[in-house]
Length: 476
Image (cartoon, rainbow, N blue to C red; front, top):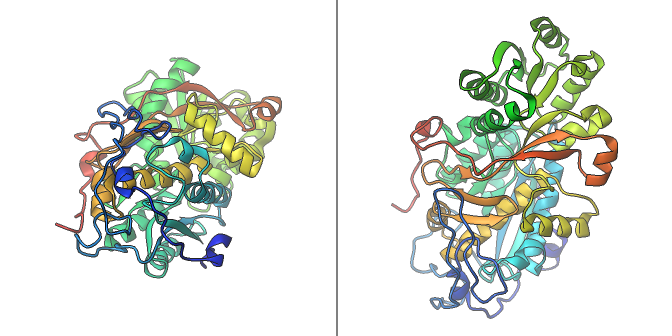
């Protein structure tokens, strides 16, 4: 069911305001300042930040979209009227519902900021706080219920009924892959959050999908760098993992970087069957192995339940637990038992950059709490799309895709850039640790940063990138 913001119920169309749309379009990626053009943001390794805009531009037909009338219609382009729709399609119910609800809050906030200013929008020259390219941004939202078929049906509806130019949201890798297919088939760009199967940027890559976070291969790289430095080199590793793409790819990557190419030894593994909630057999296998580190490739509420079983069995008294991708709702239910649990996060509110401080402050003003990674994922993903549209001067999907393929920016995620070969982002990540109740009260979140990586990514000539075959832009 479509859930539109109250403002869109009052008026679906706003008269375009006069602005130098061409000037905005010429502002390059990641530019920040006081509106005078500014310096370009720094790119990650292998890419330069953009130059500041010079305030000039090409006159348009008044729509704000410089390519209207110059290119053939494709996807939901060109926009009709004086507004555009951006949609959310994430798991507000089901096993990953808590993270999806957080994603929705970040999405609602960025839509408000794009239309009315505030937060990071006020720090970016390319964005006016008066919509995108002068178009008011309307929003619709759908609940995937953590179900791939529901996600497909929602995506088709937001494309066919809502005429969305872009959408974000999603947690499960299976759900994200299903939405990638819809995006490519309909020529509508899509950017998900927090899905971590390596195949997303490998055999399931898509020209119309950009992956703005880490996945299993990159998490493995991060763990290989950070975990031995924190926990020591003479350690014995055991895997308990969900026996599908997410768990399989994360456990394999951890073995690659911590054992095959690292200092640890492998003590064994025990898979968790789909819908298996009782982990007693896996815990018994772990205890019998003699391992002193557990790599627990589970996620969200499933991981919280599994961790509680391990605490009850006394596992955590002698074994260090690492969760490849931790989240607030994984550790929050654990309370003090989460103290000392390690994991990887794509972002933490303790990240040391000015944009993080701006986002945290704006989020607290709106919601009265400290944001987590899921809040930021939909916020910054939508922000990056808006910056790319302004740089391209158009919502024309192939033009926006080509712009994103050369895009670099520096916001709360740190120095970031997408790659043309597989649309995987290159940016920093965080090795974190669960904290005590007292420390969580101080931080406003259950994790603290132990180590921050440099921007991480593997070569385009390495797996899983070598498994990626991009589809067409659609205007060839």
